[in-house]
Image (cartoon, rainbow, N blue to C red):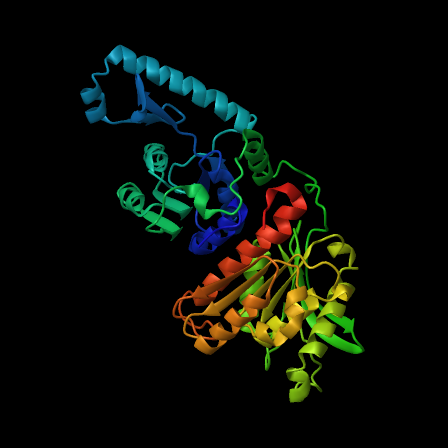
Length: 445
């Protein structure tokens, strides 16, 4: 499991914490990287947001070894064994304590901009970070929350080292973690975008959470759209559903497979995950109700690709989608239609294609004309389709990758199989739609 960025990770973490909505909760983000994650959690839980300001105190001349930590309001936790073993004298300890508190006070003033610290006494403290490696800071934050009178302490993070989780469970009532990979080495490896977070960003998020902004922050696109639409394409009126999250970074148009429609639960799940990641999505019917029983049209890849290209051309002209890079997601026969459309000049420039359990082989010689980076996702137990995808991949000249989901069958109905598909799609589209649009030099094929 990889996360697009801290905001997307926060929305996913918030779903796991939704049982806390309605309780007397304070969400605390560890600065700086934990605050964007905590902001999303606080939004979903409708809870106040603050920072968990903790300052580690290191042993003199060996600062990486923590002898304790200090929090606000005079709260501290010390490790007597480390103090004894390091031979730290009382005078030295007092000086280290004063220096740490002075640093903490300055940072609190800078981040909160005059707002008081939220009180934890008698409340549930949800302490959030963007990832947990050693867990030392998170454990110190939990102890500080207890010392400040919290009635319950919950440690929450998108990703953590397995050994750190065990230690966290000894200092928190509950530990919530979305992924704990055995191969964990660094938090940043589990994010597509792990850009450092500045104090200015943290201060802005705290201000937004406190309601200080009377007007919405400026956005490239309108606040958001979630509507049914009708699209005219190649002499047919096709029904669809368009979702444009605030500040969308790209648009993904879905092409369903034979016997399916815009109501496909699998495509809707993937579309929801893409929306969480800040991408607009369009699911639509490639055929009219009167055409759905015509097998020639169901498997007419040329017709389906022509309609898909026409829909993309039509939808680009909406004001709320103007200028957004476009990607295509195809399933089953829709994968062939997506690839043929990507090769069709009438479709305009397509930035990326993802195929789930697809039949890209039906794209024939058009595959060689596809320029968009293409991801093929196939279930490991879907052996016949896997062979067809390997043959199709050999014809592709664009940047491409074939990913096999172990044990998954054609419809990806096995536990976590579809979630894996969504993770892969989010990562691919973020890399080839959003990042190049924001920083053209940041992405290599």
